[in-house]
Image 1 (spheres, rainbow, N blue to C red):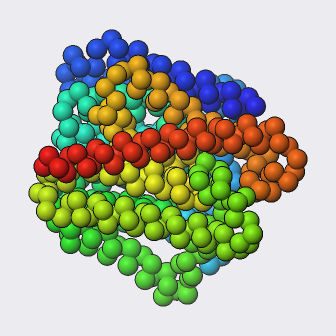
Image 2 (image 1 turned 45 degrees about the vertical axis):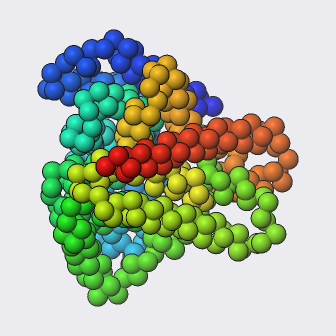
Length: 421
């Protein structure tokens, strides 16, 4: 329970800090250099202060996947073992080696939290630079303040999750596209896939669609991956292990989780049904984006790159049967752009951003604390803990409503920008 209270307080306080900063009008008056310094202070000061308070002064241990997955696989390669062949791995083939390098710097799981804090700062600067090039000054600065003061970003950094790695890679690829370096953009995505996990593929269609030279982007993304996985296959390694490891896992916070009790009679076919629906909807979204972008000049495509990333991201969060709220970190900055453009009344935007961040930060902890972790909603209902279950379902409905609202805003933002191009 303390973890839930802590995350709610952190998320709410951070969002209110962002609202106060924007209300002061100071961000719009600063020079570009001073504004970036303000952004970094807004993000790094709370993150580092909480890191010291939790992990140095209080002596707390890093939780989440770091001690259970990241550290063991990193120590396995330090012991001379090979991923996939000598131990199972749900991540990219180079992930344990990155973890091993981090442990060489500081032999403690806490290094992953510090690394996430650093990557979040880089992602913030890269996202802001891309927004400045694509949008007006007010949209870029409001979006950046909202992201810099996101409690969800802060919580994920303190947990040390590798979601920050993917978010930073997506920010770098977006900025490189804006700066007409398409092959380098694709190369960053290739590195993210082999160093983090296959989930980076989610945003590849959008990046490819918005690239000026699509073939160059594709070469940058595909050729390094072909070399890495070609080598692994040549040594007899089964490179599909991560997909099989993750294929049957579920999480709360999505429509399949809430609807599972209604399709239990389908048995083992139910998860495959949800997988099919998710792929169909994601594929439909990509086709719609491709049609919209087909005749647009490259500059116009780049203006709806962030709404498009948001649309794909929230579609995945809504319809994938495994969509932990940490994954929202991938597209959270683009989502802030959509909110800054679409919600003109500052108090309404503040209220939504606060609620959204609180739900993103605290929902997984509530799932674990109330006893739903690792089982579907139907199995949880069978335990007889109805009060806790119904309370959690309300939380999930609120979170799903937030995703749906952002999806609708993204859809209309893309449609309107395409029509005016």
